[in-house]
Every structure is written in C-alpha cells, then in structure tokens.
Length: 96
View 1 (cartoon, rainbow, N blue to C red):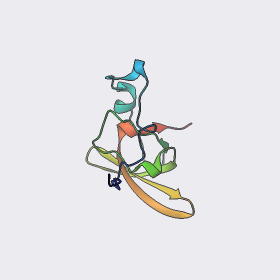
View 2 (cartoon, one colour):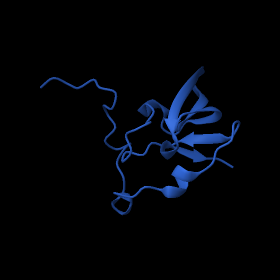
View 3 (cartoon, rainbow, N blue to C red):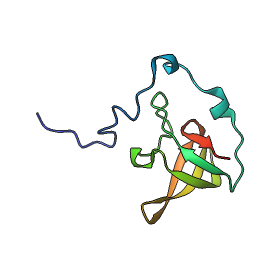
C-alpha cells in the first residue's frame, strides 16, 4: 500500500484526546481575549479542525501580532527561521 504524505501524516498521538476530554470544547480557551503582544503557546486541539496550524508548530511559543477574522496571527520561530502562523483561539494557550 502506498504511504500517505498528507499534511496530517504522523499526527495520531499529537491530535489524540483523553477519554475525559472527548466531545468537549474548552470554552475558556475559546473565549479568552488576547491582546497584541501577548505570548501564547500553540497547542493543537484535534477535535477542532478549523484554524488548525500545521503539526510542526505543536508546542511552539510565539507573540500575537494581529487578529484576522476569528483567528490570530502569531509570529514564532521554527528552529532559527521566523515564521507567521494563523490559528484560531482553540489552538492557543496564554502564557504568563
């Protein structure tokens, strides 16, 4: 069988949720009001596919630069390269 090379390949453990968290939306994470300049961690939520950044950014820390519709624009570093990620609030956690 031919191997899949899609954008979500190898995400079985990253996007898995515990039994107690299945079917639940963390309302505090969705309703959190971010300000420009806030530090956030990118933590993917497998139950929400909309606005999910690529799996390589799982666990990355960045700074919010702007709001784009319902999503946020985050500047972060992928290894030594500066990158911009657009993600919805379900996939972000505030730091500090």
